[in-house]
Image (cartoon, helix red, strand yellow):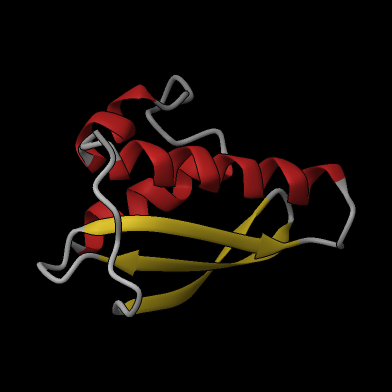
Length: 100
């Protein structure tokens, strides 16, 4: 069952460079500090990469709101043979994990 976020909630914005471009990432949190939503903005509006990043943020937000842990998402994303994330979502999850 989805755990709704309060109307007003703390958030943090940071920048990520991936796919040779900059992305602004905003993370909204529940009152206890756990992550509940992700917004990814970047690239040129209307480009496929921006749409892919935004869609990834929506899916990750839904997963978090339905109780999927950040660690589970981190384990599920595609990684290269050396363990590095291969998608914008993976890079963001890695940064959030490192910050928490």
